[in-house]
Image (tube, rainbow, N blue to C red; front, side):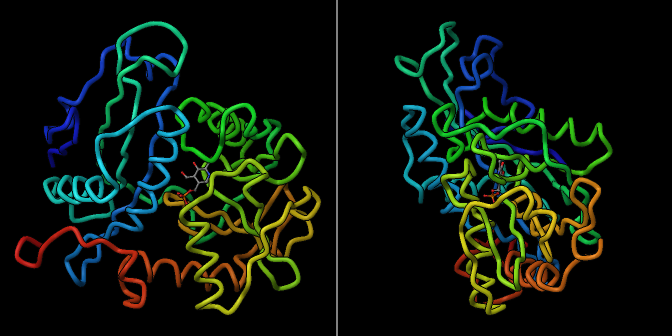
Length: 309
Ligand SMILES: Cc1ncc(COP(=O)(O)O)c(C=O)c1O
C-alpha cells in the first residue's frame, strides 16, 4: 500500500519526502520527534490514535528546548495527523512519526539562526517487544543522559544514540532490552520505555528528576492503575537492588504497551512469569487504546468516518 507523508507543508507520497545530506538535523541530531500509535479496531472498522494531543504537547516542549517554532497549534497538528492517516488508509496498527527538525543545509553546531521544518511519516507497526510472554532485561553499562547534558524530557533525536548503545549492548549479550541507571546511580528507564516495579503490592516508578522521558504511557498507566485496578503509584528514586527484590516489573511505552519483565540480570522476577498486576494492567491498557473501553474514548481520536471505513 503506498504510504503518504506530510512534508514541507503538504501531503505527498512518502518516497518523495527526502532531505539533503547537509541538513542540520541529519548532521547534529538537532531535531525532536514523537511516536504515536494508531490502533486498528476491526470490530468497529476504526483506527484510533492514542492521546495525540499529549504527544504534540511534548513535541512542542521539545521544540522549545531546541529553540524551534512550529507554525501550527496542537489542534492543527492533530488535524494534520488524522488527515494523513486517513489518506494512507491502513487497516492495521500503525506508528506515526512526527519530527520537527533544523532544516537549514548548513554546517556549524548551534541552535540559533537556523530554519525549522516539520514532517510526519506513517508505517504499519508490529508489537515492539514480547508483551504477551514477557522479556529479559539487563542493567546497562551505559548511564542515561542527564538533564544538564541533554534534557531527557524532550524526545530529542541526538540523545537516542544513548538508547541505541544500550539496546545493542543488551541484545548482543542475549537480552531483549536494557535498563539504564541515571548518572546518580538510580534506576532511570529502558532504552525506549519507562519502568515500573511492584513492591509490597504498590506500584513504584522513577520520578522526572531521575533522567526519564515523561512517557504518555507512563501517565496513562498511573491513571488506569488507580481508577481501574485500585493501585496507587509512588514516584520515587529506585535503587538497582530493588530490581532484584521486586514482586513484578514492567516497561511502558507507545511501542512497548505494558511489557512484563520476567528476568533482570539473569535473576527471575515474579518467579520468571508474568505477574498478576502486570497482566491486569496490560489488559486494561489494551482495551483503552483500541477504543473498547468507552470510558476512555476521550483519549482515542477516530481517523475514519463510518462511510470511508
Ligand atoms: C527513552 C524513552 N522513554 C520512555 C518512552 C515511553 O514514552 P511514551 O509512553 O510516551 O511512548 C519512550 C518512547 O518513545 C522513550 O523513547
